Length: 188
Image (cartoon, rainbow, N blue to C red; front, side):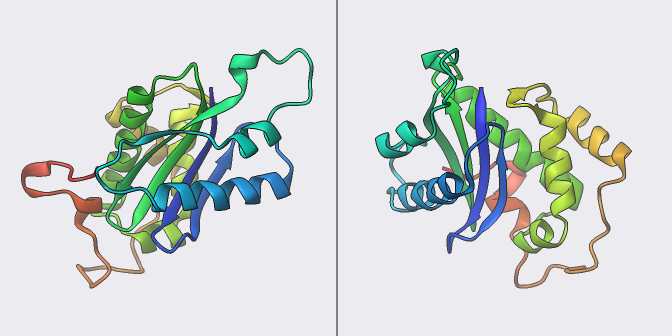
């Protein structure tokens, strides 16, 4: 199960925080801060998976005695594109490689919806961010990973705004979060 999806910029400012498990606000804020610190301090040569810090894993456990142990958040999977970190916190039952693929599809969907998405698109059109995530994940369970269906679903909702903020290729354009020549993604 996916417990949270987080998107940060390089300065640590959250651009998206979506929690699928109920946590107190103070725990959420501590989790956001700790996760960004862990991910941002990792070298680019390190793998994109790391265990949830024990302090946070203990505090984010559910207080219901019927919750199985394998439903406890325990894995952080992330991907860094240009100026943004895409982070998923999940249980040990989720495949880390599948989560990396989920992040990839999410970024490609955003790139398709905004045509060369940049951080300003995410700031001013957060509804599209949430709508795209809602097409892919419901209640912490992945329901759709086909790029075309995700993009069609968001467009059908009418949640995609035209780009009034950065019409052309300005200094803030990131050309698809680090996409290289021929549509090859250059993320870690």
